[in-house]
Length: 119
Image (cartoon, one colour):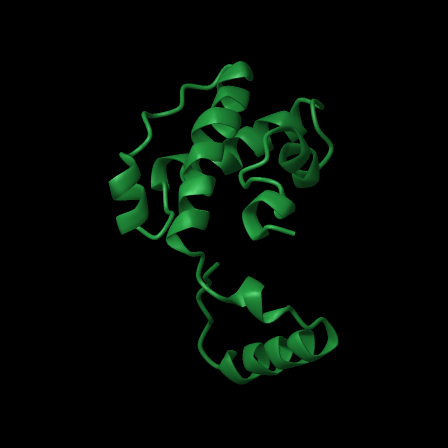
């Protein structure tokens, strides 16, 4: 995740992040970069589950990067990341889904938690 901070808002942003992190702590393993094995699981999941789901909704999904390129980019498939908001926007506008969570449930971008983290 990333964002830009308007001029004069950095202190406010840092304060909000501090309060949020203190109020809703995240386990250390979720803040670490995914391992090579985890990234391979993500790649396989996106190619085998997420892409067919999005194609089933009628969208053209660009060919995936090679597994090596996906790993070099630390799990980034830019074309798919750019398409995802359009799919969600179209589906919520037409009433297919009510929220982004509906998209995550229908076409999950990540493998199940127990598969990805092994518990």
